[in-house]
Length: 286
Image (cartoon, rainbow, N blue to C red; front, side):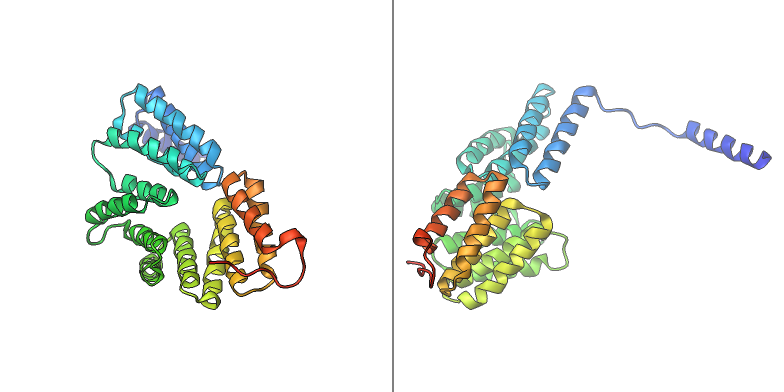
């Protein structure tokens, strides 16, 4: 009993001797909580809710004149808009983020390049990537992301060999790193580049590798895009499996409220299986 009392007394004294961390001011605490909630929703693939939370975090950070918090959450918001297929909205948000930063941060440039590629603004994307590459010299942590965007730009310019080279370098950079999302992106780009180069057989396992990763991450937008890509590959191989793949893409997109991707999937499904016909599907027209 005496030993127990001494132990309790020592714990109390230790607690009294520790200096408690001062609490964050209420509005800063609210901003941090809102930003954290937005990040959790983004990770769950709930991009609409994430965008609302990041927008609210921007408002709170502005109210306390926290410039870095404002710029950071505008970048978060731009990523959310991009994930929702609203590239134009993402660019508008990034324009405000640039004004907050005072300089073009590397993360801002990378998101900007993604939005520009999504809108088909290839020359503008190339300029953003040149600026990003200048900032990402040597052992830059974002080098794999830069490589992937360079690969996407090359693919958009119908240079599949260059796209494949960038994607394979990115995959090697990501080896043994805990970056599942970017690893999935690398496999998806490898698959798309191989398909564009006429290697549909080699493209299929790469696309399936991307799908396996994205399923584990439970990311609806990427899962739907993986099924679309698998469908495109299967159409090139002229198999009936393409119809099922496009249907899977459509189901995922509809369930997740991804209207743009659902529209692409519905059109691909209609082309692959006009009037619900059976037999061999129509090959992709180039």
